[in-house]
Length: 78
Picture 1 (cartoon, rainbow, N blue to C red):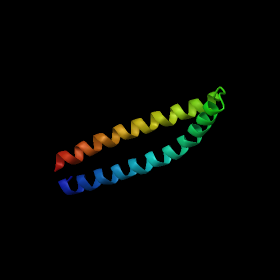
Picture 2 (cartoon, one colour):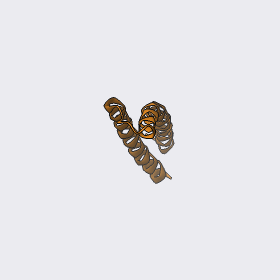
Picture 3 (cartoon, one colour):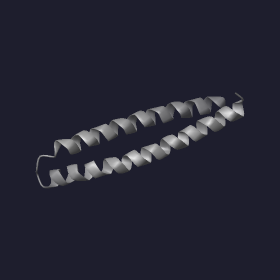
């Protein structure tokens, strides 16, 4: 694969990662809102909201780490 096509592939994959992260962050914000509301009302948060928040946070972290690796590969190509 040529340098140019590899750069193009990496840029495309980085863009997909960014869009994926944005989508997951939107989903996470729903459970985050429920958690904040529970804290403000001094109630125990619903365990499902906690689980979803943790699930989405883990997915975001994994996707960001992948995107960082892709960016390193792209930077190495110059």
